[in-house]
Image (cartoon, rainbow, N blue to C red; front, top):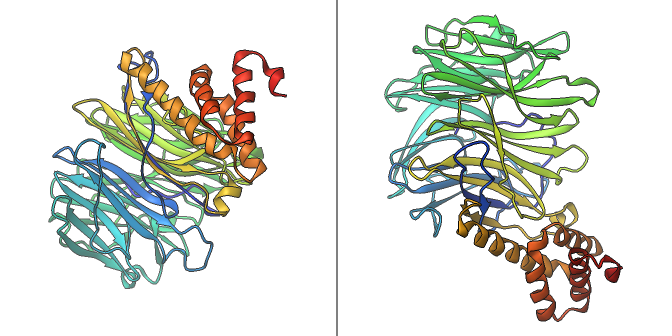
Length: 494
């Protein structure tokens, strides 16, 4: 995965919990959504996911890596970040802790080749490139550049892009104060790196956001937005001499409104696929994610296809475009500015190079807010693996809340196992919510009651069972109210 940065990131979500979901994706866009199995707790999260990814190794192991920001809002939060890693050798049935070589650095831009996990890490004064064997834990570390190499600017760990072509590695890295982007490359697998240079430095503005990055015929290309008259126009810069000089041109997409941001790129065969946010920014109007592609090495781009919408008033966090086995996956999180805990995780999939997209319901039958999704897929089985956070309500988050790292697997709805998985999933959700029905906090009890009523008629049997088993009068009263809603005798619960 490429390192990712937020569109707007003004605060920290408290009490984040990560969820890993696995699903067998339907064979066509018209097929029904797969049924996600009951979530299984893996571990608790230590804070909000800052960067992370889930990857499938050459030997079939799942590798989950994420950096968590502490929930306390202190001035040294960034330096207090900690990175965790889990590895599963049996497609998620069991997991083991995996220790990265240097816990104090902040890794980003993860990739995996065979059983070697590659990533960048930002220390206090140096950016380094790591290669770590997930079987043995042994690794190599090579310096990429130091702060002294970038004219006193701070490098920004939230945005890094790594691209691999054989033994060549290309890197675009953001700096801040002011915002610029650095380019460097390695021709020996990351052991040594060229002196970094700026990407079209004379053109960058402070409000340039998150460029896309791709290689075409050994020439690096960067797609970014240029501030012109309070608008953000898409531009494309290309270098043929290892970054010494850049050729820049404007690339119009013909969209209504001139706001573009969140560029990201991935390859499907020889086609360059790109996603971005576009539309009107002023007046709280609707924005949308779009996809486009180039079949001629980036010289021209197709008419953009709308993927998913958001509002200009929302925050959009940690987006990513990834290509796996001929499929494209776009992930992002929507969050309101006034309530950062009211998040929703979104995952879209395209099986035809971005010409059409389908949203995957990764949060099927999961109560509470979700966010920060990352995905990968198994080319052999077609299963999709997704990691995302499960956030408690804001009042619970401030008190610590219930934060879980969960694992899910799915079955197709037309498979008998699908119905069984759904019933199992709903029953598990009822059990989770029953504990909240007896909470000392009135808001928590009300939310749990509302969530029970949203599970569907499949919840009736497990609710009846919970009524028989619970010893709490409060929980029993609320369970009976929910059951009455499903049976049509809603007045009994009032």
